[in-house]
Image 1 (spheres, rainbow, N blue to C red):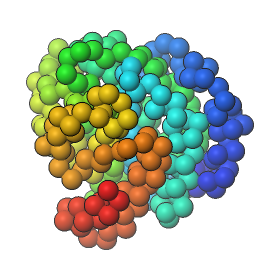
Image 2 (cartoon, rainbow, N blue to C red):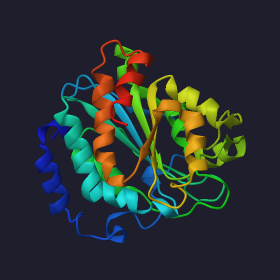
Image 3 (cartoon, rainbow, N blue to C red):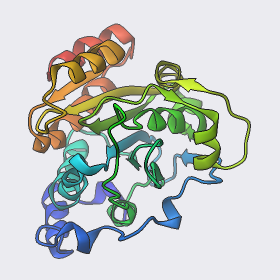
Image 4 (cartoon, rainbow, N blue to C red):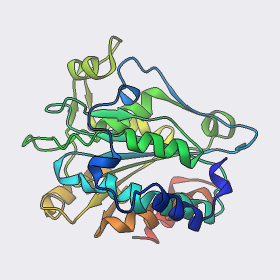
Length: 282
Protein backbone atom coordinates (compact mmCIF):
# COMPACT_ATOMS: atom_id res chain seq x y z
CA UNK A 1 0.00 0.00 0.00
CA UNK A 2 1.42 3.38 -0.99
CA UNK A 3 1.89 6.35 1.23
CA UNK A 4 -0.85 8.30 -0.50
CA UNK A 5 -3.40 5.64 0.44
CA UNK A 6 -3.47 6.77 4.09
CA UNK A 7 -5.04 9.82 5.66
CA UNK A 8 -3.41 11.82 8.44
CA UNK A 9 -5.76 10.15 10.96
CA UNK A 10 -4.72 6.72 9.60
CA UNK A 11 -1.06 7.53 10.18
CA UNK A 12 -1.68 8.68 13.73
CA UNK A 13 -3.72 5.54 14.40
CA UNK A 14 -0.92 3.42 12.97
CA UNK A 15 1.61 4.96 15.37
CA UNK A 16 -0.74 4.26 18.27
CA UNK A 17 -1.43 0.68 17.15
CA UNK A 18 2.29 -0.09 16.91
CA UNK A 19 2.80 1.25 20.42
CA UNK A 20 5.01 4.16 19.37
CA UNK A 21 3.00 6.61 21.47
CA UNK A 22 3.64 4.69 24.71
CA UNK A 23 6.84 2.66 24.25
CA UNK A 24 10.16 4.08 25.47
CA UNK A 25 12.90 4.65 22.93
CA UNK A 26 14.71 1.50 24.11
CA UNK A 27 11.77 -0.62 22.89
CA UNK A 28 11.45 1.10 19.52
CA UNK A 29 14.94 1.67 18.18
CA UNK A 30 17.76 -0.76 17.40
CA UNK A 31 19.86 -1.51 20.52
CA UNK A 32 23.05 -1.56 18.43
CA UNK A 33 24.33 -0.43 15.07
CA UNK A 34 22.29 -2.01 12.26
CA UNK A 35 24.04 -3.67 9.33
CA UNK A 36 21.14 -2.59 7.14
CA UNK A 37 21.94 1.08 7.78
CA UNK A 38 25.72 0.79 7.65
CA UNK A 39 26.88 2.93 4.69
CA UNK A 40 30.11 0.97 4.29
CA UNK A 41 30.25 -0.17 0.66
CA UNK A 42 27.07 1.63 -0.44
CA UNK A 43 27.37 3.07 -3.94
CA UNK A 44 23.95 4.65 -4.47
CA UNK A 45 20.56 5.20 -2.94
CA UNK A 46 17.99 5.74 -5.69
CA UNK A 47 14.73 7.66 -5.70
CA UNK A 48 12.86 6.31 -8.71
CA UNK A 49 9.44 6.84 -10.24
CA UNK A 50 7.00 3.92 -10.47
CA UNK A 51 3.54 3.24 -11.86
CA UNK A 52 2.09 3.88 -8.41
CA UNK A 53 4.27 6.98 -7.79
CA UNK A 54 5.07 8.49 -11.21
CA UNK A 55 6.24 11.94 -10.08
CA UNK A 56 8.45 11.40 -7.08
CA UNK A 57 9.44 14.22 -4.77
CA UNK A 58 12.62 13.08 -3.05
CA UNK A 59 13.17 14.11 0.58
CA UNK A 60 16.09 13.33 2.88
CA UNK A 61 15.66 13.79 6.64
CA UNK A 62 19.02 13.71 8.42
CA UNK A 63 18.64 13.53 12.20
CA UNK A 64 21.30 14.29 14.79
CA UNK A 65 21.19 11.29 17.16
CA UNK A 66 23.97 12.38 19.51
CA UNK A 67 23.36 12.75 23.23
CA UNK A 68 21.45 16.00 23.38
CA UNK A 69 19.20 15.06 20.46
CA UNK A 70 18.24 11.54 21.48
CA UNK A 71 14.61 12.48 22.09
CA UNK A 72 14.04 13.90 18.60
CA UNK A 73 13.98 10.58 16.65
CA UNK A 74 11.72 9.12 19.36
CA UNK A 75 9.35 12.05 18.91
CA UNK A 76 9.37 11.65 15.13
CA UNK A 77 8.30 8.01 15.42
CA UNK A 78 5.49 8.47 17.92
CA UNK A 79 4.14 11.80 16.66
CA UNK A 80 6.26 13.59 14.10
CA UNK A 81 6.38 10.95 11.36
CA UNK A 82 2.60 10.54 11.05
CA UNK A 83 2.18 14.31 10.99
CA UNK A 84 5.02 14.97 8.54
CA UNK A 85 3.81 12.34 6.09
CA UNK A 86 0.15 13.26 6.44
CA UNK A 87 0.84 16.99 6.12
CA UNK A 88 2.91 16.47 2.96
CA UNK A 89 0.11 14.43 1.36
CA UNK A 90 -2.52 16.96 2.44
CA UNK A 91 -0.53 19.67 0.67
CA UNK A 92 -1.11 17.81 -2.60
CA UNK A 93 2.39 16.29 -2.83
CA UNK A 94 1.19 12.93 -4.09
CA UNK A 95 4.44 11.01 -4.58
CA UNK A 96 6.93 11.84 -1.83
CA UNK A 97 9.80 9.45 -1.19
CA UNK A 98 11.67 9.77 2.10
CA UNK A 99 15.16 8.68 3.05
CA UNK A 100 16.18 8.76 6.72
CA UNK A 101 19.76 9.41 7.74
CA UNK A 102 21.06 9.36 11.29
CA UNK A 103 23.98 11.66 12.00
CA UNK A 104 26.61 11.41 14.73
CA UNK A 105 30.20 12.62 15.05
CA UNK A 106 32.81 11.21 12.66
CA UNK A 107 35.60 12.22 15.04
CA UNK A 108 34.17 10.40 18.07
CA UNK A 109 31.37 7.94 17.25
CA UNK A 110 31.33 4.36 16.03
CA UNK A 111 28.29 4.99 13.80
CA UNK A 112 28.51 8.60 12.60
CA UNK A 113 26.34 7.93 9.54
CA UNK A 114 23.36 5.58 9.25
CA UNK A 115 21.50 5.34 5.95
CA UNK A 116 18.05 4.04 5.03
CA UNK A 117 16.43 3.81 1.61
CA UNK A 118 14.09 6.12 -0.28
CA UNK A 119 10.63 4.75 0.51
CA UNK A 120 7.03 5.53 -0.36
CA UNK A 121 5.14 3.40 2.16
CA UNK A 122 4.53 3.84 5.86
CA UNK A 123 5.58 0.27 6.66
CA UNK A 124 9.01 0.62 5.05
CA UNK A 125 9.57 4.08 6.52
CA UNK A 126 8.79 2.63 9.94
CA UNK A 127 11.29 -0.15 9.29
CA UNK A 128 14.14 2.21 8.53
CA UNK A 129 13.42 4.68 11.29
CA UNK A 130 13.23 1.94 13.91
CA UNK A 131 16.52 0.49 12.60
CA UNK A 132 18.23 3.70 13.77
CA UNK A 133 20.76 3.20 16.54
CA UNK A 134 20.57 6.07 19.04
CA UNK A 135 24.27 6.01 19.83
CA UNK A 136 23.95 9.10 22.01
CA UNK A 137 27.58 10.00 21.46
CA UNK A 138 29.25 13.09 20.14
CA UNK A 139 32.06 14.88 21.89
CA UNK A 140 33.47 18.18 22.99
CA UNK A 141 35.01 18.86 19.59
CA UNK A 142 32.94 21.79 18.45
CA UNK A 143 30.23 20.13 16.40
CA UNK A 144 28.57 17.10 14.82
CA UNK A 145 28.77 15.56 11.35
CA UNK A 146 25.89 17.24 9.54
CA UNK A 147 28.26 17.57 6.58
CA UNK A 148 28.05 13.77 6.17
CA UNK A 149 24.43 14.22 5.05
CA UNK A 150 25.59 16.67 2.40
CA UNK A 151 28.36 14.31 1.34
CA UNK A 152 26.03 11.33 1.00
CA UNK A 153 23.33 13.28 -0.83
CA UNK A 154 25.86 14.84 -3.17
CA UNK A 155 27.83 11.73 -4.10
CA UNK A 156 25.67 8.70 -3.35
CA UNK A 157 22.08 9.45 -4.43
CA UNK A 158 20.30 9.47 -7.80
CA UNK A 159 16.89 11.09 -8.29
CA UNK A 160 14.45 10.57 -11.14
CA UNK A 161 13.03 14.01 -10.36
CA UNK A 162 16.38 15.50 -11.36
CA UNK A 163 17.17 13.22 -14.30
CA UNK A 164 13.68 13.28 -15.83
CA UNK A 165 12.19 16.61 -14.75
CA UNK A 166 15.11 18.78 -13.62
CA UNK A 167 13.41 19.17 -10.24
CA UNK A 168 15.60 19.17 -7.16
CA UNK A 169 14.88 17.06 -4.11
CA UNK A 170 14.89 18.28 -0.51
CA UNK A 171 17.50 17.73 2.19
CA UNK A 172 16.80 18.67 5.80
CA UNK A 173 19.41 18.34 8.53
CA UNK A 174 17.99 18.58 12.05
CA UNK A 175 20.05 19.25 15.15
CA UNK A 176 21.30 21.58 17.86
CA UNK A 177 25.08 21.72 17.40
CA UNK A 178 27.42 23.39 14.88
CA UNK A 179 28.59 21.32 11.96
CA UNK A 180 32.13 20.02 11.91
CA UNK A 181 33.98 21.95 9.24
CA UNK A 182 36.22 19.29 7.70
CA UNK A 183 35.66 15.75 6.39
CA UNK A 184 39.02 14.08 5.81
CA UNK A 185 39.92 11.16 3.55
CA UNK A 186 40.61 8.95 6.56
CA UNK A 187 37.08 9.40 7.90
CA UNK A 188 35.50 8.72 4.50
CA UNK A 189 37.44 5.50 4.04
CA UNK A 190 36.42 4.30 7.48
CA UNK A 191 32.75 5.16 6.98
CA UNK A 192 32.24 4.37 3.29
CA UNK A 193 34.90 1.76 2.52
CA UNK A 194 37.57 1.74 -0.18
CA UNK A 195 37.24 4.36 -2.87
CA UNK A 196 38.68 7.51 -4.37
CA UNK A 197 38.27 10.32 -1.86
CA UNK A 198 39.62 13.73 -1.05
CA UNK A 199 39.48 16.07 1.92
CA UNK A 200 36.33 18.19 1.92
CA UNK A 201 35.24 21.32 3.73
CA UNK A 202 31.66 21.74 4.93
CA UNK A 203 31.05 24.48 2.37
CA UNK A 204 32.37 22.22 -0.44
CA UNK A 205 29.91 19.49 0.52
CA UNK A 206 27.02 21.90 0.98
CA UNK A 207 27.62 23.22 -2.53
CA UNK A 208 27.73 19.67 -3.90
CA UNK A 209 24.45 18.71 -2.21
CA UNK A 210 22.81 21.87 -3.53
CA UNK A 211 23.37 20.71 -7.10
CA UNK A 212 20.45 18.27 -6.74
CA UNK A 213 18.71 19.32 -3.52
CA UNK A 214 17.12 22.30 -1.83
CA UNK A 215 19.16 22.11 1.37
CA UNK A 216 17.90 23.38 4.73
CA UNK A 217 19.07 23.12 8.30
CA UNK A 218 16.50 23.01 11.11
CA UNK A 219 18.27 24.25 14.22
CA UNK A 220 16.64 23.16 17.48
CA UNK A 221 16.88 25.94 20.08
CA UNK A 222 15.59 23.94 23.07
CA UNK A 223 18.94 22.50 24.17
CA UNK A 224 21.90 24.15 25.88
CA UNK A 225 23.93 24.20 22.69
CA UNK A 226 20.97 25.09 20.53
CA UNK A 227 20.24 28.22 22.54
CA UNK A 228 23.71 29.68 22.05
CA UNK A 229 23.80 32.69 19.74
CA UNK A 230 27.28 31.84 18.47
CA UNK A 231 25.99 28.46 17.24
CA UNK A 232 23.09 30.09 15.44
CA UNK A 233 25.38 32.75 13.96
CA UNK A 234 27.68 30.05 12.58
CA UNK A 235 24.78 28.31 10.88
CA UNK A 236 23.47 31.61 9.53
CA UNK A 237 26.82 32.33 7.95
CA UNK A 238 26.86 28.92 6.29
CA UNK A 239 23.20 28.48 5.32
CA UNK A 240 21.90 32.01 4.86
CA UNK A 241 18.10 32.04 4.62
CA UNK A 242 18.00 28.24 4.40
CA UNK A 243 18.56 28.17 8.16
CA UNK A 244 15.30 27.54 10.00
CA UNK A 245 15.36 28.32 13.73
CA UNK A 246 13.01 25.93 15.55
CA UNK A 247 11.80 26.99 18.99
CA UNK A 248 10.16 23.62 19.80
CA UNK A 249 10.89 20.33 18.06
CA UNK A 250 7.16 19.62 17.69
CA UNK A 251 7.14 22.37 15.05
CA UNK A 252 9.20 20.19 12.71
CA UNK A 253 6.08 18.29 11.61
CA UNK A 254 4.66 21.51 10.16
CA UNK A 255 7.84 23.25 8.98
CA UNK A 256 9.05 20.48 6.66
CA UNK A 257 5.74 19.99 4.80
CA UNK A 258 5.36 23.78 4.51
CA UNK A 259 8.75 24.12 2.84
CA UNK A 260 8.23 21.15 0.51
CA UNK A 261 4.80 22.33 -0.61
CA UNK A 262 5.78 25.98 -1.10
CA UNK A 263 8.91 25.20 -3.09
CA UNK A 264 7.25 22.45 -5.14
CA UNK A 265 4.37 24.78 -5.98
CA UNK A 266 6.78 27.28 -7.48
CA UNK A 267 6.55 26.56 -11.20
CA UNK A 268 9.66 28.53 -12.07
CA UNK A 269 11.71 27.05 -9.22
CA UNK A 270 14.26 29.86 -9.26
CA UNK A 271 16.38 30.61 -6.21
CA UNK A 272 14.69 34.00 -5.83
CA UNK A 273 11.22 32.44 -5.70
CA UNK A 274 12.42 29.72 -3.32
CA UNK A 275 13.87 32.37 -1.03
CA UNK A 276 10.71 34.44 -1.07
CA UNK A 277 8.40 31.53 -0.31
CA UNK A 278 10.60 30.07 2.40
CA UNK A 279 10.59 33.33 4.32
CA UNK A 280 6.80 33.12 4.70
CA UNK A 281 7.04 30.36 7.31
CA UNK A 282 9.93 31.72 9.39
